Every structure is written in structure tokens, then in C-alpha cells.
Picture 1 (tube, rainbow, N blue to C red):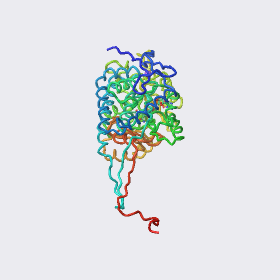
Picture 2 (picture 1 turned 90 degrees about the vertical axis):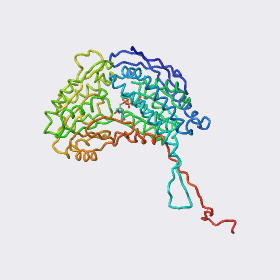
Picture 3 (picture 1 turned 180 degrees about the horizontal axis):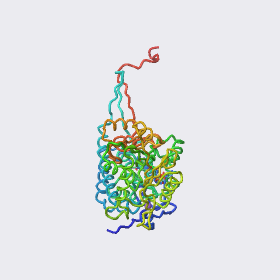
Picture 4 (picture 1 turned 45 degrees about the horizontal axis):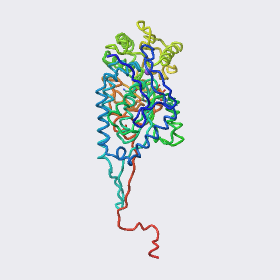
Length: 503
Ligand SMILES: NC(=O)c1ccc[n+]([C@@H]2O[C@H](COP(=O)([O-])OP(=O)(O)OC[C@H]3O[C@@H](n4cnc5c(N)ncnc54)[C@H](O)[C@@H]3O)[C@@H](O)[C@H]2O)c1
Ligand SMILES: NCCCC=O
Ligand code: NA
């Protein structure tokens, strides 16, 4: 099936609207380097309209059709969205592949995860009704108290390009489940499927203004959203540099934020492992999604007893990775997302070499692909802890390697980073795995695997990888406020002041 990019406008108040300044951004296919369509470019003027629509949507009929409706009402919409995503899965997966270069089979897998995420938060929305008015036990029997969980209000959701629709789903599904109204600002590098999500919301009859989608550049659309006084919260996924800017502007208004930022996660391979199994997890941990995963295990720490043999194995496994047009069957590594990302990845490799590291494999354009932002998966050895390649996030298919001789040394090297998103340990000694899992400074730990991610389990980092958690019940809580309601139940007067009636 040939596919073309639908021409869409901004989605505001349940309608397609041309951006006020009528600007558009080209969509470039990273495989062909050709412009294959365009997306609308929102600016502060459109942010104003979307925020107004979202506020009115919450206020309409005092929220009875949304924010103060039962969770079961909202769950119906979430399930309908999930069903439409599943129905359109082949087309959405293709759109995502040509927009960001993700291998088609991975994009199809992502669409299942997107649908699963909407279904999961439908369940949690229903469960929310039963959790209302949870009693709080108090030390005085003259009072009783309960807790209401209420939507935080209008939320701004700002997302990156590596999992274009999935990163939107991780925010949109729980925000809607909680009863918020949202303005979604996806990445200008991969927004096509988020506009299709808007179309789906229109088709399922989501009340107007509850989800607004503003595509556009970060500085033009993201920044005015983050600093808008009528946006009650910002949930952000992206780079640390952008995260800091958003925090700074949100701080002016004491606006809550959640930050899902970058990483330079370690994978520690001990000398008691099956080398092939460990090699496959190592390359999956770093090269899946074209090496563009926030939690990718980009730093391999391998026990010195097996290092040479293990590196040979990894090189053999890498030679088997099919690098091709992401739409080709069996593709396992497509192009990186954009020309600037391509230049950035190659620069990291050349800087590593200049600093004295050895490029054991890859890190160059594959010979059989003359066009497109393709980089062969890179394995870099002879790395020291002062090198850029050890310290900074590449966000591309580049693995750097160090050896260790003891568990303590492995842990010290694993934690030698400003980041703390993911960490993986591979060993047949499960007690050791538990010890290492505890010692890792990270929000997500994998034992005998790297990267599998489930909607039910919390996702987020420590240190400069951010704060707050997405997914699971934690992902819903982030869009809810907690209100305590305390009642005086004694018939006796309070009796603190002298009563004037007794004077
Ligand atoms: N922790 C996670 O779950 C997770 C997931 C995916 C990606 N990431 C991180 O995201 C980064 C890559 O994504 P990216 O290149 O899209 O990041 P980015 O920070 O460049 O952009 C992220 C989003 O922020 C917007 N933006 C840019 N400047 C802005 C501003 N001044 N104000 C408001 N919004 C602005 C962008 O338009 C985009 O929508 C990597 O660091 C990666 O590790 C983290
Ligand atoms: N598998 C989803 C990972 C999201 C972060 O990049
Ligand atoms: Na694109």
C-alpha cells in the first residue's frame, strides 16, 4: 500500500484550524531525504486559542461532560480511541516509519503499545470512581476526613520524536483518564501521527477542546505553552537543555512539571553468562529504535575475563543487523531522524577517535546506502571516563565499552554519570543481580534484558534524567490533585474562645 502524508491543520476546540500565521513545516523522509508533506506550525497566537478552548471545555456545564463526569464516561472515549488506533495500525505504522525512519515492524509494535496504553488508562479511569472519598483515619473522633482525587486542570504535553505517537499516548491517555483537558505539542521532527490521533478523537466524538494538538517548533509553540498562565501543569519528555528552559519558565508561575529527560544508561555483563544471549540483549539495548531511546544502554561494562570473546560476538551480531529502508521487510536499523541528528552522531564518533578511543565497528554510512541518514551501529572501545563518548548522550546507535574486574568496580562505573534513567545487569547469579539492581542509581532496572517496557510499570529517572513517573498508576496520579475534606462531627461547640452568649 503506497502511503502519503495527510494534509492537516492544527486541532483546536474539536476543529481543524489553519495556524493564525499560516506557517507550515516540511516533513522530510529520513530514508530518502525528500520532502514528503508538511505540518502546520503553531505560534503563540494558536496557543492562546487552544488554551482558551481547553479552559472552556473544562468549565462547560461545570465539567459534567468531562472533568466531573464519572471515570466510566471518560473510559468509553479512551477505549474508542484504542479501537481506532488498532483499526488503523498498518497505516499509522507506515506513516511513522516514513516520518522518523523507524523500522516498520517496530512502528507496528508501537501502535499496539499505543492502543494498549489507551485501554489501560480506560481501566484506571473506571477504577478512579471507586477510589473517591477514601477515608483518612484521624487521631480525634470529633473529626472525619476523606480524600478527593481531582483533575489538575489544563495540561500542556510536550513530546519528542523517537516514539512519536507512543510518547504522546503516555501523556494523553492518563491526562484524559484523570479528567484534564490537554494541549499536545509533539516534536516538529515527527508530528504526523499525532495529527492522526486528533482525527481519531474527532471521529470518536471526544468533547471539543478536551484534546488540542498544536504542531510546531519548540521555541514558537512549546515555549508559549510552557509559560502560559492558564496552563496548570507541563508534562515534558525531551532533552535536558529544553527541560531546564521549561522548568525556568514554569517556576515563574509555580507551575508543576514532570520531566522525562535523557540518559547514558549502563549495561553490566558478568563473566557467567551465555555469550550469545547477552550479546543480543546488549545490541538490542543500544541499537533498537535506531539507537534513539532515552533509556538505551549506551555504556557496556563487560567483565575482563570475557571481554575479547564478548566483543567478537557483538561484532558478529551487528553484522547481522539488516540496515535498510525501514519499510523493507526484516529491517532492524533505519536512518536516524534528521540531517542534524546524522551530523551529530558522526561528530560524536570522530571526537571519540580524536580523544584516543578505538572504533571497533561501524560508525560510518553503510556502503550499500547512498542516501538517507543511515549510520552503521558503532562499537567504541579504549574508552576512558573523561571522554565525551563516556559522558554525553549521543541519542544514536553508538555503544561505548569499558571492562571491569569486580562487582564493586562495575557498580562504580555504572553510576559514573550525571544521568539515572535506565540500567541493566546480565548474570546467571540472581542474588548478584538483586544486589546490583539495588546499587544502580536509576529509575528503571532490567535484569537479564534491556529495554522491554510495560504500560503497567512506572517509568522515569533520577539525577539529571528527570523526576516524576509516567505509566502505571503513577502516570495517572501525575494528572490528579489530592483534596482533603475534613468535617467536624461533634455536637459540642468547639470551645476555644469564650462564647459571647455566656457573658
Ligand atoms: N525519559 C524519557 O522517557 C525520554 C523519552 C524519549 C526521549 N527522551 C529524551 O529526549 C531527547 C530527544 O528528543 P528531542 O530531540 O525531541 O528533545 P528536545 O528537547 O529537542 O525536544 C522535545 C520537545 O520539546 C520541544 N521544545 C524545544 N524547545 C522548547 C522550548 N524552548 N520550550 C518548550 N518546548 C520546547 C520540541 O519542539 C519537542 O516537542 C533526548 O535527550 C532523549 O533522551 C527522553
Ligand atoms: N520503549 C519506550 C522508551 C521510551 C523512551 O525513549
Ligand atoms: Na520527519
